[in-house]
Image (cartoon, rainbow, N blue to C red):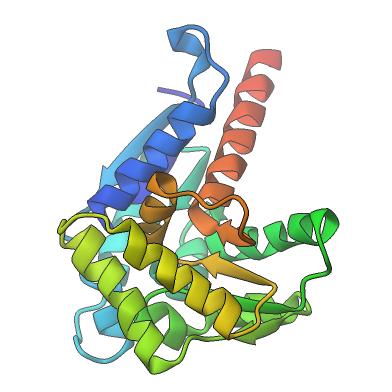
Length: 243
């Protein structure tokens, strides 16, 4: 197979399925050959990223991520999508292992805040809903502050509710609870006087897929990465056709 991208997924599997579904439903296709070529690594046995970052585990996911990248390189991938926000803590090490671009989901999400600024009032205060690992890693905080916004993290009680949505409802497959999810969104946005909030965990993107709230200033990092993936895969296909 030529002209394909690779998804490093399985972190978790439901979120990876959501990413692929998001790509497939947004591509303008009228026949089999119109869809993009892609390869999915559903690496569900990947060591827990948050546990390693927070020191609860000494088993790093990096060796297995690097092995997946080596395999994708050997097969000739055009670019790589890392569909786990927390794993971007290791982004520099992963990108240094390949000459093929790895999409940076936090950077893509923060870039998308500019669209909200054009459509509504200027964006100043930006909150993040993510894993404890992502919060500790600080990847989103750096991207948000570098772009000139004020970063706002949830207080411990709200973070516990976010963690429960991620690990109990989605990863734990205990069912998606719309009311719990919407209450978390509202509490984060309005109790912290935010202009926007970023969903910086692909499990939260699963909830957003099922219970979208377009009236709220919410940036879904996975959804923005889906748009970028389609853009790059289309460009790759066009470049190949012109050769």
